[in-house]
Length: 487
Image 1 (cartoon, rainbow, N blue to C red):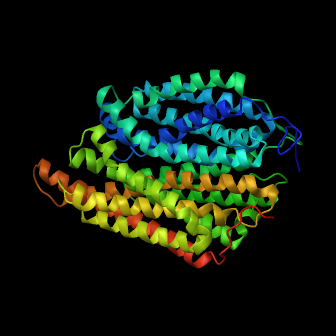
Image 2: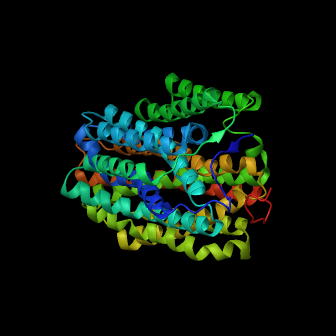
Image 3: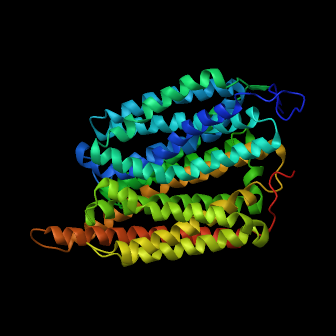
């Protein structure tokens, strides 16, 4: 058990006069992390063409970031508490700036993927440091709730801002500026943080579950690599199954290590609870389906419909608006209907919207297919996300609240790594099969038709993931509890 050296919830302490400036710095800095996940989607078709990245490997630009972010997020939370929240926040900012430069100057795909992976490493430090800093900076409970509300609203809007920013930067400068732009923001926020943030840390034994972090991260890398190899060489090659088997063995070893270590990265009691485990499983599957869906919608808009990057970014706004609207108006329904009802209903709507995308045509269909599908999936995902924490954090011991909160982001990021890898493998296989049936020269029109055939297969797979999420929420979650961290 650790004790805090900082003054959290002590009424005798004077309020920090710079606390709202601190919130501004924290919010802008972490908004950058949120933006980076969506901005790359718009830039990816241009980066792929510029760096001659194959279709089988292009998903690494998304998954390399999500893998390290999700795989190291729990460890990052422990490092933040013991090394110092302000110190780790500054390290995360400077590291993220350097990693962004590396990715931006990439002469080839491997360098881009390495830069994206490093961005994920430092994002895994930034995200928990930001939340912890808000908690210790705002000692008044009412002000803290308001601060978290402002922080959450900015993060929710980050996806939409990232899509527009990615479109503007890619269309009027270069896809590289979608990465370079992080550097001045990160450095400016690091300088601004020096006078307004106060250092704080937890006391206690500084023990980190390094073996657990390495096992879960390398296991996920092996799984994603196996899917990528299947896209390149096929499912019937020994290397594909060796990589997948190695990944599963490493993940199983992670579970064994967590059972035996005295200071586990993920205390298994957190996920063995039936309701909480069902919520985390549904979150993992939702993340996998959502990230994969967005990847292929980006290519459909820019390749098949010929949208320029800015127009493609604007075309995604109904999706972001649906999430924001459902999260805003759905919040009161959590206590009225119960989180399980809202999670299952939201997932069902998301599934319906994804199935609409299977009606895509090669060169038309935004207003008749994509727009209604985006609205449905956005509304459904917004309802799911607003209800998820109420199940994941309900009736949990105070000592486990932090790791359970981190698990929400971790499951979404891990899903965001595995989902695009799996769906891209299915897409490449479907496209190769479609073109193999054509003899002679393949016209541009036939190739566009082949792309859509691959997209449909990917969207069906995404729908299958949402269906599994629906089953997890409907069958595993039994409680209607809505209070978080009640211990």
